[in-house]
Image: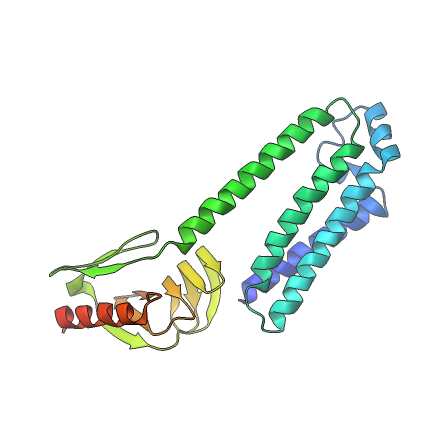
Length: 240
């Protein structure tokens, strides 16, 4: 997860730097749309304290991410992801609040755009979360392994080179494309020792089935331990 920590630190530094330049150095052109307003409108925004409020929101967002990173380094899982969710909610809420400070002609249009952006963003988050929590199911035929759902696979049984039932998985280094929240890992990840592969896991419900196909691999399990063991036994009966 080193890459995740680096990204978090980069975002923290960026928020602090932008906030400092806006609040302390009055570099207001860093604010989206500020430069495109007339000189009179810019004076109104400055008088109402709009740029300062926006700059402080950036700094506060940086502190939220710092808090999430600190809790993550204390071995509390998923604090980085949670800090991003809190930050997004804070930013949108604050933007709605400071929107009252924008009394220029374009304020109504900007408010509508912001509300639509909020609806769109949380709609996307809702869809991604729904997809992420949906279970995957493993089934086999005489010739094929099939895993249903997003990030599922169809692998010929004669191409599968190894199947194991394990109680742990190697450390996750980074998520390259997928969903990771709470104990659900779903998608493409890079693991120590194994490199890039596919995880379809409930991490707090071992055991896990490790399936290898040449250089490709995946881990999968069910919330139901008995179902996981049944999947494993069915595969072993067909392959060996």
